[in-house]
Image (cartoon, rainbow over all chains, first blue to last red; front, side, top):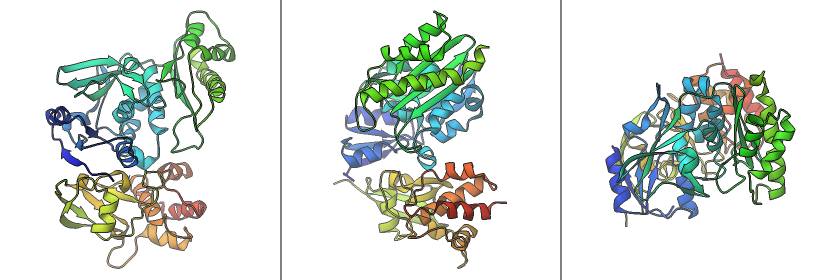
Length: 278
Length: 154
């Protein structure tokens, strides 16, 4: 492991101080991506600032605004949180599809988002839920919609010195049914070759995909066909997804395969959530 | 050179105070400083589970944790399960069911199994698969491991 210094942060201002002092400071929450990345040379860290025990980042609560998930909250804590299971189970599904049980005991939702991988398993569900990202930085606090947070592979809307403090799943929740479908080479541990989230409520549907574009994307063409043009045939609607994605070939799958499997997973997601339309 | 950090913690019920380099993983610290070599090094990227330990009673991959993060916490390794020379019931069940061949994954398997039985004394097959999703056995003793865990359930 390459050498770095370690700073334990007891509050947010300390974390921001370390970020401001050294641009090669990396924040440690779960560490499941960070430590692998430092060891593998992906991250050149001079300093690691541990934020996981900062009290205000451990928030996991539901109130009149919705569900707030702090940066220190683990994926298992989220998947087991009753308001998540009851109101937005699609998020629990996304969380549970990452890594393994023991990795999810450490890994965080905010960390998954901040890595800004186009394949982040929690991203597609968060797109469907209209999640809001809460950011703190030298200029104060601000919020951005989850779709504006991802700007490219490994790139996010975070500016120098800023950190994500929490994710808000706003009310009203899209009550109805949501599913997250993931194609991967093995059933656990692997990243998504394609990930598809479908959330239906009333006559409306929202669909998002991961690992098929530089950022997670909404399937706007499919949504429009169903929500505005009264297309009811799942296969017909799903075939439109090719307009919304621009996949590449990599070790997990070819561009052609990703086009194909995207249509399949969108169709399955539509079929599995059809019951809420009747 | 980076300065060492002083950490205080409990390991297998004993209070300890040590100095650690800030970039040392918990796995390296357990094996090379505490000399508790029951915890194994496998993939070092959190996929195989050979390095599983209990940190504040929660199973974690010690290759993905820094030793510095141990400060103020309670660590249990495979060596901490036996009491007064008597093996823990999960350890006994693994022997009774021959739930291993080479044994390299066994400490991690038993740590994960112990944690599962603590939070769910009567796990289904599906519960066992989910809880042990982070433990790989290259010998393929999965059926025997499942039987050993079932034998411990109530």
